[in-house]
Image (cartoon, rainbow, N blue to C red; front, side, top):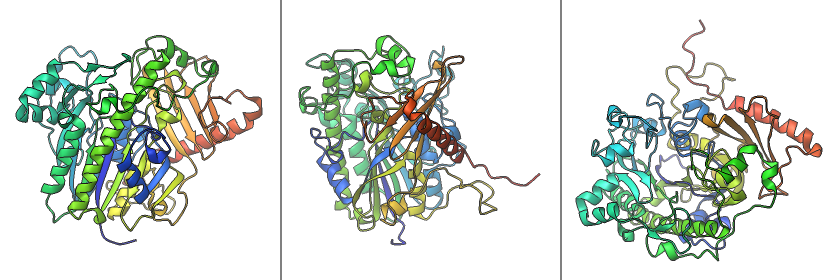
Length: 517
């Protein structure tokens, strides 16, 4: 592989499933630009998150640490700015670092705080109320190593930040319409489905692509860049602009997976979430609804994905036009997936099904990565060490470096470079996922292997232990929980033991000791 130091374009979506692309086998969703990217690059079909929530996932992408390591264990915990980050390490090495769109390393809201003005905008620069009320007009930089930030905060029609300021400044009539006209109704009236009230060119997906293209054109050409192009969609609510809101019908989408009686084999809170309001990090309303509504949600989500694909194509065309494609590593991924009606559930929460955990991950470096589709296991933890190895930048370890050959690596992820370059077919035999929903009394830990997945639950004191064990080869839709199967008791024990070892291996190794006494 060439010794040349590349630039990086990280294209990140929010809440996009791995199977919502044509290149992932979806027979309905039209994603020609992502399909082309997958053909030219390495399409990792079994890439997982390490926590299925926005803030923990994004903190992992920035720090290279597990949620246990960076302590953003769930949404609503801001990332400690003292942690070293990928953008910070690259900036110190001479890279230009920037983010356009969603960041979400600080909270969007603060629960029931009685006086939001007591929370300083400089300490909470992503809080929607600060932007809505004009207390802030820009993210202070550097922001977790980002030298330039043009931010979006929020989703659907409630998106603020630099996007909202742009509308106020350049298109005040459109901004007034956005803040006064609700999303248009959907044909079936499914929860959260509608039509964005502005034309596509004023939508935040178009804005993120436009500003990313502007950055590529205006940047200082003498230095490499690390640029995040981060779309707030296809997160709910489901309201793409016309014509994307009608691109797909509820009759043609791929129906959610599930079977009668499966809730009887799952943890008790699954039925609670299905039947009654229960506050989760992803939603608070019951997920029980007519099947037709789930299908309409899928149809609108497909439209949002195709809209993103269209604008990703514009960004990639700009790389080509500017002669940057050859020297730029392009990564396409998402912070987590969405249940999308699978097993009767929606959005996200403490559920470790594939639709929520598995995300798209495509890597392209023209003429340097071997184009292929791979089922090798990967996770968001592996992205930071891969980027730094490609950049020739050491992992930031603090004051001291390793002092003995058996000392664990500073970051728990595995560099994917040997896989991307075709030197090996896999870099690991399992990945771990964790999910703390403390207010529910639940802590989930999951191990995924090439053939199986096991999830353990902790928190319900005095209750009979329960969990999930799925055979991903014979039961890829996870319809039959084998946790209590007598014939799988020995396999369950072996996988729990393996999970224990992987959790220990991925525990934090930083900071390094400064001495031995």
